[in-house]
Amino acid sequence: MTFLSYIQGPLINDWVEEQAQWLIDQVTGGVAHTEENLWATIKTRFRQAYTNTVEKVKAQQNIWDLRMKGDDLDTFISQFQTIVKKASYNLDKEATLNVFQRALPYKLVANCIKFDHPVTWNDWTQSA
Image (cartoon, rainbow, N blue to C red; front, side):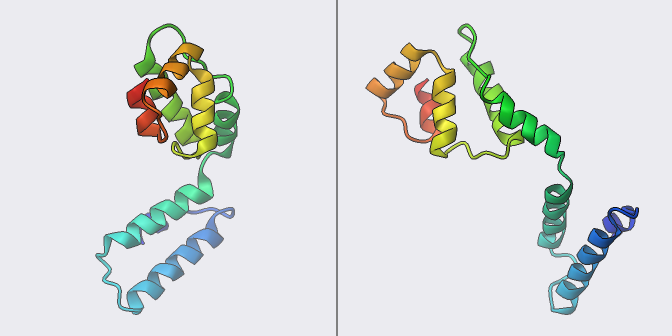
């Protein structure tokens, strides 16, 4: 409730009231006010409601332009993970893995498939 009390303004007041009512309902329904899930839920709802959507769209566009340059695989993997997170994609989804493969050098992908048959994100990063 303290967190919600700091959030004010005509564009957010309805959201704050909904969250405050949800918290009140939870506590009056028997959930302990010290339950960490209450804070985690409000935090998640806040991020979902007020995440920078421009950043998300930009990341979704930038992921298509990303390519591994040189031999610095670790930096590339880190950049890819960051963009995937901002784009709200899942690293283990087939479409995301396909974009990752397309961004790698052809011979590296061919060798990964030939020798390791990677399926998941962890498989791909370890194989590469």
